[in-house]
Image (cartoon, rainbow, N blue to C red; front, side, top):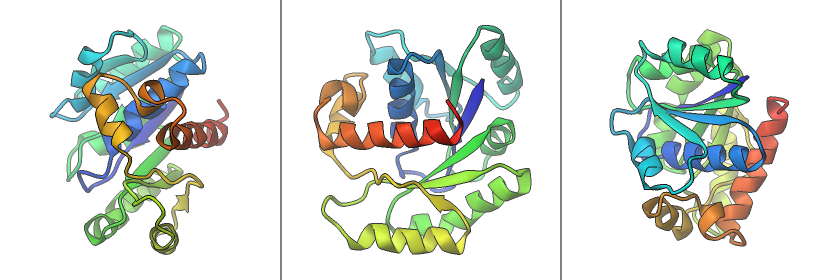
Length: 207
């Protein structure tokens, strides 16, 4: 069983959107997938309640419950667990990072997110976990934002994923329906980006 922790100190950078989208792609690929929601706002859990599909399985967890839930997931034959963590300083994110095989760090192209990036990078380093940064909420057709992000990620020694996730309406529209962009608009650029990111991340953890 592989575990991905989606973590970033700054809120509003697309952690839940990325967690939900990747978990859908994993389930579509035939993997037995669980999405664990550790954010007190429970946006991933609420999204799951709007879904008609029972896949992926979404479960809320506290820091204390996490080890038991992961143990149960492995015993049940889960192939992949994705953990959606809360922003700001919390005990949930470190617990998720300690348990994971790869830390996915969503980061929007703004100074507030860049300023918080070193904290998440330090958390990954201190736990000895590999981390990859994903530029999220980028403006479509912007050439400067990915290049600036790449330079910022290099300064904190985090590899940048080759796929940029742009700010497309499909993500918000899909969330309202309990879907992902790839489900509501399968031929859209938003869907293509998520599929590309999933394939790359799956290769990183050998899924």
